[in-house]
Structure formats: structure tokens, C-alpha cells
Image 1: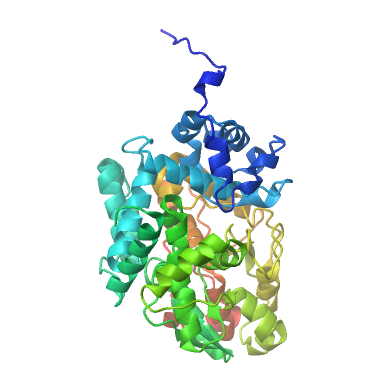
Image 2 (image 1 turned 90 degrees about the vertical axis):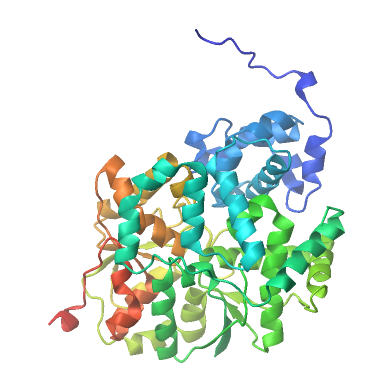
Length: 196
Length: 289
């Protein structure tokens, strides 16, 4: 049976102050001057897959519709190509706003559980914090195992191609000053008042 | 001409053909590189998605290391590293709070970043410092008859590029013409390759890969030339997976530096030409003979 859903947002759905909070983040100030022209959605190579287009996300974020925005697939489909940022006639750094929204969605734990993109971000960052560098092949394998092992098996052709061309390497890349790096990242947390 | 060299993780990993070809080509032109000692991950797109401030701190460590190395400029061949390093520099100057956090974090390990180090891409250095005339003089085997689609990808020129146009970059076009190649019109030159979506949301990623390869085919290109390890990986290593959905478009994607090496007559094993999954078999006539 078709599900009947309310498609109009009510004032009660808003989380007052959310828009202003976003606009206070470095790079996100210009959101207030969005004229809803839709240039961002038009140039976005991924908008055809999005639940809310970038233009809609801008309107929702500015209008305090926190839950709708943070639950949106759009955040995770943004590939950070900066086409919208360059084209925006109001100088809004849309890509940076998307980054800010992704971060908030991760902090609040609002994203599809096994959806691979936040998993990739987490695995990537854990690897950087531990080793200082990314071993790409290891990251790719971890990502597949943690999200969809069957897809990994479907990619066997790529594995063979990478071995054949000498690009398949699981040797861990790392830096010497791993302790320094961790100290730096901890210093950021301490400054922000986070738990170290 | 001497630079600190920031390879980034890809040039030591899946994009090693880029480093393999770039180093001998620059050496051949008298550009001296010194690998930044103990460099770390630039911060890249995935880190930005979780913590933009920390991504900038990671980038800033590399910038600080460059300043203390005594070299005046940093060279970053990977488009993503180039973007993040430049973005950090912008934020450092634009936002006092960001500058304070960066300095505080660097200070915790006795480092300091002044904010001046220019971050340069090899294309910029080749065309604007070395010069196309000097490059032409080194061409032994012109790439005559090779039709190339110049593919810049997104993050090299957007949004912080200092040396080329954001809408219609031409640096690589001119470089490839100087090598004697036939550069075809390729309006998708800055369209996104899908980044990590090829792995995370294949449905969307494969479509972008297909669009780029198919446009190159329609324009009659023999290959695509790229400046970014992720673009190369997506257009090359995902070709098999893309083919399963859209049919094969077997046009190889190679680094501009590999094409330079071929034109200069550098020895092939040096250029990583066998590292493409979609084989690149074209050779200049004089070499083939």
C-alpha cells in the first residue's frame, strides 16, 4: 500500500538556531545570502541521485530544518568537486557547507548504518591518526569488508588488474613522528574542550 | 630551481606511475626536488568530511615542515593534496580562529607555520617557470598523430587554483601541444570523476566514469591525459566494472608526465607505462620504428 506522507514542513519541525549555527562556521557565512536560483543543483554532477538537491539543502539548512538536512543522502553524495562553489552567483561556499553538515551528521550519529561513505571517512581518519599516511589498498579492502563483502568479491577483476600492473600493495605506509601527529590532533580536541 | 616535494599517499600507492614518470621528467628539465622529510597525509576529502579543523592541522604540519626545510616552495602533484594544502593556507589567513588552532597544534610539537609557502602544482611549474620553449627543446620524439583529451578533473582548478582558469583551464592543453600531440576539444575537462563514489556508490560513480570516457571516444581521442591519481584510478581501474553496466570504452588514461617522458625519449620502465589496466600501447613513430 502507498504510504501517505505530509510533504509540507511545519514550523514545529524546525530546530531554532541551527541555520545561524551553521553560518557561524568558517567558510559557511555566505549561506544567508542564498537567492535560491538553483545554479548549484544545475551544475552538480550528482544532483540526479539526491533526495534534496543542493539548492533545497541550502534552504532547509538556513531555515533551521536540522533533521531533514542531516538525514539527507545529499550530504554523502557530494563528491566535493566544488562546481557549485565556483558557479554560485552569491559566493556561497556550498562544498564547505556540505562538509560542515556531514560533520554534524557524523557527530549526531545520523546516517544509514552500513552506508559506505561515513564508514570510509572514519576508517580513513583512524588510519591517518595511527600511521600518519594512507595505505590505499588496505583502506579499499577495509571499506569493502565493513560495508559490503559481496561487492568486494564482485570487484575481483580490479584486484587482478591491480596485481598485474604492480599496484596491489598491502605494506603499511607510515611516518616516523606518529606520536607528534597524535599529540597535534589531541591538542585540537583539547582546545575545543573535547575529551582527549 | 628547487622545490620541496610532497608526494602524498596516492603517488606512493595506486598512483605510483605518476611519481615514477614525474621525477625523471623534472630531473631531465633541471628541476630539483627534495622529498619533504616525514610528510604526512594532506588531510584530503575524507578527513574534511569528519573534521575540517583537523584536516587543516594535518595539512599545516606539511607546510610547516616545508618552511623549516629551507626550501622556498612546495610542489604537490596530486590534485587533492594541492587543494587541501592551498585551502589550509587560505583559511590560515582568512580566519584568526583557525590560525590560532593551527598554531596551537603545531606548537604542541615544536613546529611553526608562517603562512607564506607557495604550494605549486607541477603543471604550473612546467608551463610558468620552466616554460614551453625549454620543454619543446627537449622533445626528441614528438607525439605526432596522438589525439589526447585533456582531463584536469575538479580539484586542481577549483576553487583555489592560482595558475589557470576555473572554467576552461588550458595549461595542460598547451603543454601537450608543445609535445607535438593533437589535443582534442574536451568540454568535460573539469567535470568530476566521482571521487570515492566509484567505490562507495557504484551506481553513481560508474555513470560519471562512463560519461567521461564516452565523451573522449566521441571526440576521437586515443587517450585521456590526467593530473590527478584519483581520476586516473577511476577512469582506468574501474573500467571493467563500468563496462559491465555500459559496455567497454577502452580508452587509456595516462598522466601528462608519462606523455612528456615518451616525448623526451626517457626509458620506458622509468615511466610506469605498464601500470594502466586499460593498456596504453601507442608509441611515437620514431620509437616504434
